[in-house]
Image (cartoon, rainbow, N blue to C red):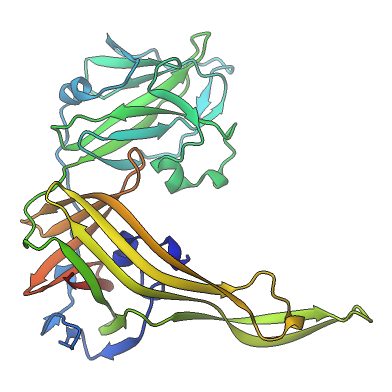
Length: 374
């Protein structure tokens, strides 16, 4: 993955081999103070790993009443059952329901994943509710386009042959005053009234904001730590992380057309992170700035041209999103991505004087980012 693709949330959660770096081993897992400012006498442990979050299950009637689906009608009862006719439309079914995240008052875009057949509309119901939705294709919430929703990003459109590049999807507008988890079932029907198989989907509505354990809003990355098998490694900003590759470089002889090859090690690419910062706003939003450069072998380079040639690209990128914080569990959640296609990353947030530490991991590996006031 190229560094220019890295957002601040990924810098907090990716392995250190991807970001930039001079690495110093530190005995055991003790983080020692240096002139860059950091924690003193802190040991990375599972205390720095967020526990799996649980969510309140939203009442089926409450969420049915709270959802907005433009152009849809609501009816009492249960949608028609799937048709046994072989001409009925069908949807790809990938097994257990995928859980997607979105913010209060936001939207969720759901790919229909059609396998075959015509689509004239959608039936949708929250289990346990007295009513269901009927969403005809003419509804403004039913859309066609090259939408890459949360589902398709997780699964990857390239892995499946959808029947067209213009995927059908529908949008749910979430209530502003609810947070928690709900699930729903949906199917599609065609103009003849034939009904497809039923797909299940779950949504977590994330709250926004909270009481952070600091008053300062803007922070910059100082360095990173990772702990694995009892050894902590420290990574600094500003120095290239070089990825080497043993490779065979060959040339065709213009006269004999014989292929001569040479085996040697080259630097395939290098990434340098020069700067990264994040600002937490009181309205529950955040913004970041990430700057650096990456260097890759020039695709047009040929061994006859002499030493390996590289192309270096600088990047200076920013992103915005939402945050929420639980002062009981110390879990900081960063929500990012465009509305309808949102993702979350979860971290433990701790404060020591003028520094923050944002960490994640598991029983075997822990990653921590140390930030100072900007």
